[in-house]
Amino acid sequence: MSTHDLYVNAPAGPVWEVPAAGAARFSWDYDDGRDRLLALYQKGKDKQWDGATRIDWSIEVDPYDPLGTPDEVLTLHGTRHWAKMTEKNKGDLRRHYSSWQFSQFLHGEQGAMVCAARIVESVPDLDAKFYSATQTMDEARHAEIYGRFLHEKIGMLYPINDNLRGLLDDTLRDSRWDMPYLGMQVLIEGLALAAFGMIRDTTDKPLPKQILAYVMQDEARHVAFGRMALRDYYRQLTDAELREREEFVIEGCHLMRDRLRGVEVLENFGIPRKEAEELSEQSEFLHLFRKLLFSRIVPCVKDIGLWGERLQKAYLDMGVFDLGDSSLDLLMRQDEEIAEALDRERFAAEEAERVAEVEAAIEEGAAEVS
Image (cartoon, rainbow, N blue to C red; front, side, top):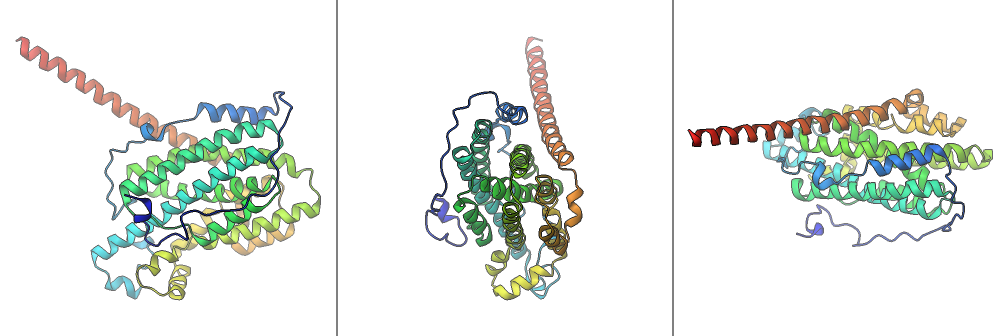
């Protein structure tokens, strides 16, 4: 079945074309480069994995409750609309919300793949090109995995959200080589990591937990890459140049915050857009979700040196300023440990199954002999 047959609403055309801007840069300096980036490049090579085999796709998923979502976190819960809904309607709502979330993850990963390829093309340093090449492969794998989950397990997709599309467009159209780093590695990847983590840590369903944990293990490296490269570069910029980047961050944060309401889902349940927006803004869960979404981005922005008065005020107004003191290194270590723990659990279970099969075969053989 074609992907286009699974879209709830038709995308705006089969292909989205964003005019390329900026120069392709070649470096003739083949010395070793920066140790930190080369170590990250080595880790990127070592940590490559196959989504077709590392993830257990045989696990069944209920498309009407893919994530085990409690009633209380659904925007319509407690409203007049909820009282009219049947159990089937509620299952449909869970399916649509899961489809919407994972569709935005999918579209974001394709955007990340294109941005990583753009970084390979435009960044002047060879060590950064090397690492970006491994990231491009990572993002391709993530898009493959999210696409497979949506096709095979949920059977429904949503088009790219307008605000995510707008941020990608701004990121890709900018001719400055550092903007794909800032737009993708810091903003989109940072916010995606927080969204992935919230679902990973709350779902009781093994397949989405596996997918999100393994993707996050990769994404932690990507954010580290952006931090290293931009911290070095932004030390050289003038105050005016730094203010331009801070304005981009402020606008991007507003776009990403507003993107996460899922208004499109409510519209597909017959609720007018204005009311859908109001209901979303009243959701206590959405308020908590929004704050958690900035747990990765605010400390990263501060770390790379974008911390002017206007940016600080924007974060104060959003209620996320205090997140600037969070430890990104600790969060990334936790992401690594969770993925590795899942691997250990799965390998231990597979080993136990193999031992049981061998013991059963031995017993069966002994019974035949006797």
